[in-house]
Amino acid sequence: IVLDKPQVVKLALSCVLAGGHLLLQDLPGMGKTTLAQGLAQLLGLSFSRVQFTNDMLPADILGMSIYDPAKLAFEFRSGPI
Image (cartoon, rainbow, N blue to C red; front, side, top):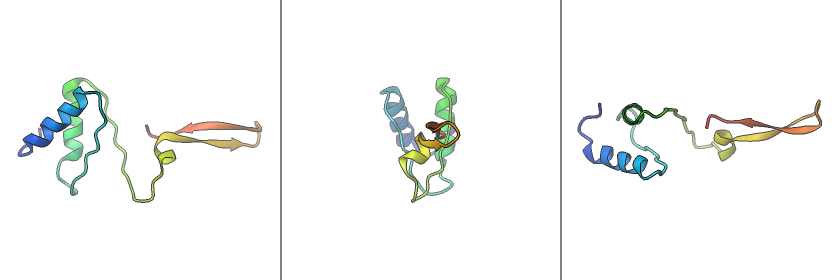
């Protein structure tokens, strides 16, 4: 699926097989999403994508507790992960 990037493919596959996390960072249109989708499909895994911006915080991705005045308690609202 991804051509002309054999080292990137090997590193990504090594990361997945080692049980690590992978951050794909490159210029727009260079096949990052295609690589991730291809690896997920090849290994029978699920695929999800988060579009980062420079002002994102961990709570924007993982979720956060928000106070619900009706229940007088905090309620966890999960993020995209």
